[in-house]
Image: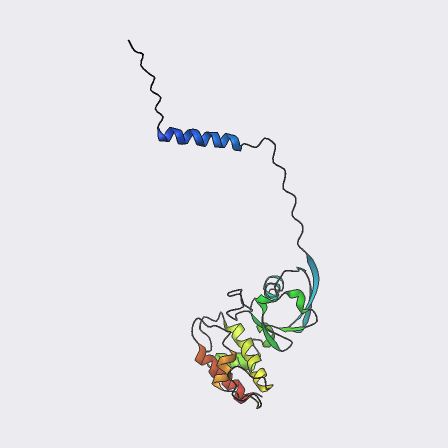
Length: 212
């Protein structure tokens, strides 16, 4: 009489479980994990910034942008953080008479320079002509982009009056005229999601005509 062979069939699920258990056992470390070394302190520097006529001395991480120094350290929150990539213009400030995107530059790069933010252009009791023109012509809706728009608009008129040509200037040997085409081209880096562009141009034209 023949002997019956034991049933040695192994299911696919059982095979997978056994394989996973073996792999887990092999992965168990034989020695204790080494402690992670302490992170080095970020580099810092003492920075003296002249903002709106007042000098402020700050101890900053050298990687701090001018935008973050203004907003987070000096509490000048009129300058807005929009895209943080230099594409929207909400962070525009005026440095030594020229507009820049403060999110794209480091605070440590601007020692000894004169920085003007929207707070330094005028006050509620004595508005800058461009601020007053924006109010008269409703050059804003939500108002988020307005500080950057105003700083840029002030600088744009100064650029045209200084004879600096733009991409749309027809004659590079003659002084550019203050026109809608010139103003539109130069303001193209300032985005208004509400679409108040026509009112902004009216405000700029008002200032160009009535304020030298």
